[in-house]
Amino acid sequence: MSYSKNPLVGIIMGSSSDSKVMHSAAIALDEFGIKHEDQIVSAHRTPTRLPDYAKHAEKQGFKVIIAGAGGSAHLPGMIASHTTIPVIGVPIMVYNDKINSDKFKFSAFGGLDALLSISEMPTGSPVVTVGVNKAANAGLYAIKILANEFPELKTKLKKHKEMQHKSVLKESDEMKKLGLVRFADKKLKK
Ligand code: RP5
Image (cartoon, rainbow, N blue to C red; front, side):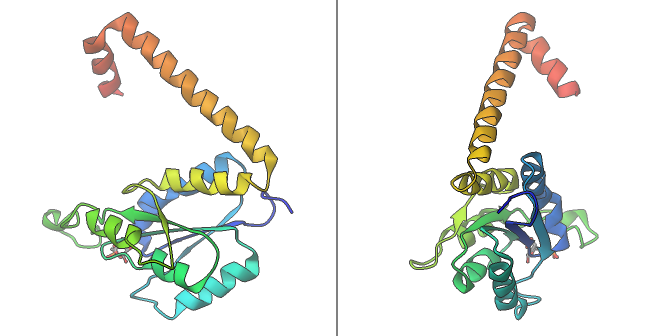
């Protein structure tokens, strides 16, 4: 079995508006050459799709599902209750961009609503939860799960860590050279 031929990760989200955040999960998987299938499945607008999607995910042989939702976010927990595939939940700070008014731009609770809805699953149907809008971390966590099966991914993850290390050192050298004020000035201008 290969992780680059057939999708092993299913990415789902409650609304098209979530794609603004959720695409970061796809970027992380793409960087590691992992195929994923992406869909919109709404727990409250398309409730009958939940068991169907879970069946589909099992039939496809997905190893992980990444599910993003905002507000009183049921999607990750409900999908987890329909399948044994591990689910990573991404709490989304709702942007309400379908409402044409600046007044309602963000959700009342800034993502805390979704964070608690997803992480506080009652005993028996767990969902691993990343931080609010941290879809990239969901992608990376999915890669870590897959790396148990594909040693090549473990090597790639180690390289990824080295790159992070190098990039911090590079920035630190630059900060030391320029001084904090000039460094921050330059960074904020980007
Ligand atoms: C949730 O409601 C979705 O996950 C989304 O984050 C939120 C708002 O959805 P839209 O009104 O933007 O479609 O179901």
